[in-house]
Amino acid sequence: MTELGKHRLGRHSTADLDPSLDDYQLAEALVREAGTLALLMRQAGLEGKQKTSVSDVVTAADHAAESYVLEQLRRCRPDDAVLGEEGASVAGSSGRTWVIDPVDGTYNFLHGSTYWCSAIALKDSSGAGLGAIFQPEEDKLWLGGTSRAATLNGEKLVSFLPDASGKGRSDAPVSELGAATYIHPTWLADPMCAMPWHAAATSAASLRMFGSGSCDLGRVADGQLDCWFQHSCPEWDWLPGKAIVEAAGGATDVVRVNGLDWFIAGGTTAVRQLRAALTSGQVG
Image 1 (cartoon, rainbow, N blue to C red):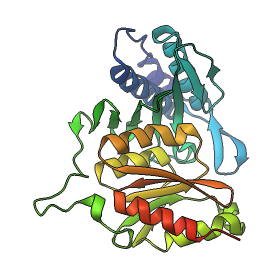
Image 2 (image 1 turned 45 degrees about the vertical axis):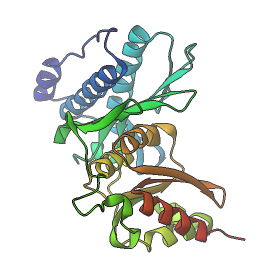
Image 3 (image 1 turned 60 degrees about the vertical axis):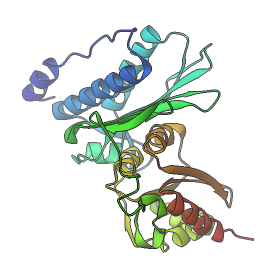
C-alpha cells in the first residue's frame, strides 16, 4: 500500500448507520459507504485473486465492503436474513433477505475502469422488495422498489413514460434498440448457450457489453441503455437492478432455455421479443 493510499483510506471511516432509517434510506447508505470504501481501498493498492476464470476475480475490497454491509445489517435489521456474493450467509426470522453484491464488475474495478458498483436488494416472501446501486466514480445512485418510484441521485426516472404522441420505450421493438448483454467466451463454445444468445443478440439493432450487470440495469432504468439480457445470474446480480427497472416502469422476465435461465429487462415489447428470440434457440 502506498503512503498516498494510506492517507486517502485514513480520511474515510465507514459509519455506523442509524437503525431508525427506513429500508430505502438504509439501502442507499449501505451501497454508498460500501462503494466508497472499495474505491479508497483500490486507490491504496489491491491485487486480485482468480475465482473461476481470469475474468472472475475477487479482491480484499470485495470482502471488506461485504463485511461492512453485513455488520451494519446485523445491527440495524437483526431479524432479517443476509446473503452475499463473497460468502455472507445469515439466517433470519422476519421472512426478509438482504442480498449483497459488494463490488459488481470486479474485473473492471481491478483494471481501473469506472464501470463497477456496489449493489444491494431486499426481498420478502411475497416478492416485494427494493434495490440500490451506487457507481462511485460516476457518482450515480439508483434506488427504487415496489413501494417507491425509481430515482437516480434523487431525481425520479421517467424514461419509460410515453411521450407527447403517446408512444414510449415500452412500445419500441428490439430491432430498433441497443441491447446490453454479457457472455463469457467459454459459453460461446457451448451450443446450448450460444444458440439462444446468438438469436437474441442478432435481433437487436446493436450490442453493448460492459461487464457489470447492475450498472447495466441501472442504465436500462434511466434510459441510457435500451434493454438487457444475460444467462445464469445469481440473485445479487439480478435483484437490485430488477427492482429498479420495475420501479421505473420497465419490464423484466426470466425464461429457461436448454437448461439455462435467461434474465431480461427493458420495455414491454423488447422484453417479450427477447424472450421469443431466446426461446427460438431451444435445442430439440
